[in-house]
Length: 436
Ligand SMILES: C[S@@+](CC[C@H](N)C(=O)[O-])C[C@H]1O[C@@H](n2cnc3c(N)ncnc32)[C@H](O)[C@@H]1O
Image 1 (cartoon, protein in one colour):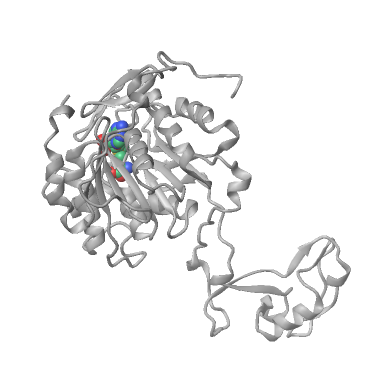
Image 2 (cartoon, protein in one colour):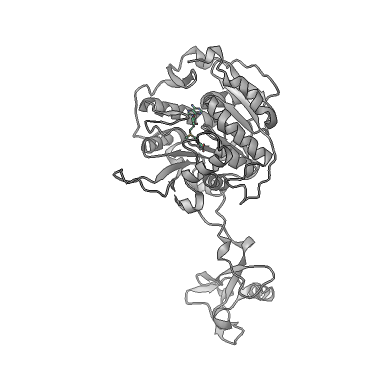
């Protein structure tokens, strides 16, 4: 606990989903919080290896999954959420106008609910804009601990200028927390691939293009001080205060293996040739440009391509952005969770990158219009946009759809992507006890 705390009205209450889109404050002692959700399986339950799309509130979904399935049992490696930012704008697919205190409780309760299910090397990424990001950072300090803060990433979300505004805001912020702390988490996160376009093949090496690095190391080490005679006969010594990168026998082996490059037509100080597979990756910067990870408009173009006949989802994120996050924070086979799925960008990208995923979206119409058809296109191999080409995705895998409501618990609706849409028609009609 910190000595400085963000306070808001009703902070001590819990915010539960109520009706189709509303919320209600409940006392922590309220009986409804203690009762298990009623559970009526329609088909087989999602099992530990399923990809699952849950229709319902994020908190209900987490509790429904935890209490009724072992889908979370292996631990979540990555949580990425792109919740409503509280911009006070009504988008076509969802309202983004909450009272600030409600928004804060909504976020706190849902973030706190993921904590027991995180793997030891997990990270939680929360995507926001200037509307609430400063308060969300304090909130995350409270939920995960200040020491869990890893980074605040600035994503260049657009390249066009709004000339009517005081400043034309063109970035969002993504807050990254790792409960294990940045030092420990660093040992398990993946580096970014080096740009192989910078590799060249200056000596027609049959092993392919390469880059080079100085064959020196800092400090004086006796075993690494020796003369190297270059192909043109120049005698090279390590620069003052440095040593050669390796001892003489290692150097001789590298030379015999054609791994040493002498610049300046064979006269210069030796350099080590490094092929693509030997390159250490790059530590990610905290500013991510649109040229590398796409813009909101790129994401909209992708959706327009998939769904030319309906209005485009208002706030999608590009798959390239999610590809980078998923690459850094998880490995194939590990579980990626998105509690505010929208058009399904996280799930689609995670699927293509062969991660297991769980995604939750509360608005049934969004699920019917975008999320399910998009994920079906990913499974069928008919989604040609996003990261499909760069990673040579051709389709495959499956996912299950489940429905959760505060009082009914989790109702699996289907186990196969192919008949998801038909089964979901059941979900399109609100149940009598759900209307509100
Ligand atoms: C900013 S959008 C997510 C966009 C998504 N990242 C994409 O690329 O399409 C936020 C989504 O969260 C959904 N949502 C809002 N409150 C929710 C809740 N309590 N539980 C689950 N989903 C919720 C909204 O309906 C909306 O689709």
